[in-house]
Image 1 (cartoon, one colour):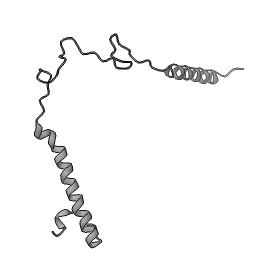
Image 2 (image 1 turned 90 degrees about the horizontal axis):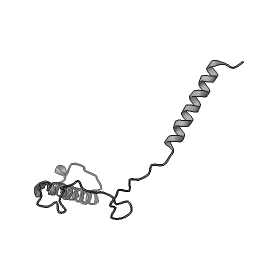
Image 3 (image 1 turned 90 degrees about the vertical axis):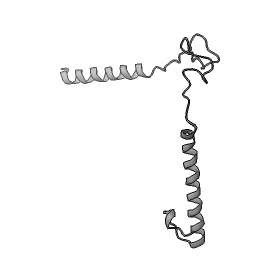
Image 4 (image 1 turned 120 degrees about the vertical axis):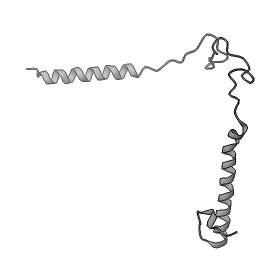
Length: 102
């Protein structure tokens, strides 16, 4: 005699296997209609300019904002150089640069 619970279990497993098989189908890439090269199929919306600089789409980044990260990286490198020089001189590592004597 067939148990109803085992039928439900078999149905659930077969449903799961079917979903797994469908999800395993590889996704195909959109190839577009005017590809410049295989895989390079981005097309701008109508009215988007060929040259962004000077157009209404130009973000006009502030040079000061763009330089903030490079300035902070340079300051970090200077602090690390001071820490390493102090460590080589004394053999003691000091994280706080303000505590390192000049």
